[in-house]
Image 1: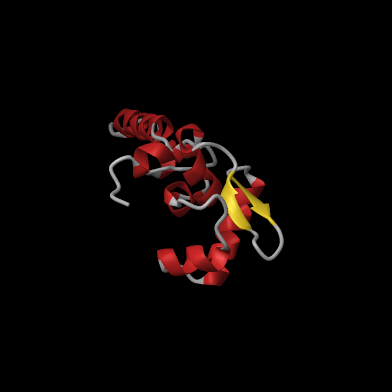
Image 2: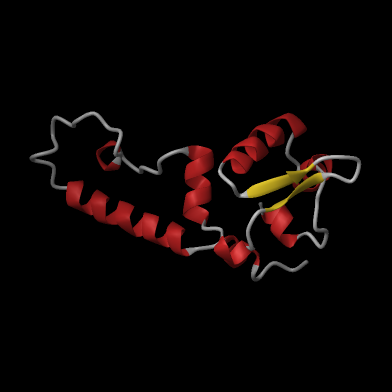
Amino acid sequence: MVYLAKSKKSICPLKEISQGEGISLDFLEKIISELRKAGFVKAKKGIKGGYFLAQKPDKIKIGKMIRVLEGEIALVRCTSKKRKPCPREKCCLAKNFWERFQDSLNSALDSMTLADLIKNEKL
C-alpha cells in the first residue's frame, strides 16, 4: 500500500512491487488479494496491467487496513471481542487499564491514514 501510494506511476505491476519492497511474489499475491477484496486496491489486466489504489491515500485508514490483513487487534485476551471469558475478569485490577489502552490504540490507528505514513517520506 505504501509502495502504491508513493509511486509516480498510476499502475504498478505486482513483480515491481515485490522487488521494490523485498516481499516474495507469492506472499504479496496473498496480501494484494485480501486488499483487493476489501476494496483498498483495484487491478488492471493486460500487458500494461497491475495494481493501483482504489481511493486517495488520505481516505485509507491504517486501522482498517491492519484489521483486513491481521484480523482483530487485541493486545491481551480480555480486550478481544472474540474471547472466551476470563475466570479472573470480575476481580482483575488491570482490566480497566487494558481496555483504555486498547481504546487508545484503536483510536490512534483509526485516525492515521496512508497519507500520514508517506507524508515525511523522501522519495
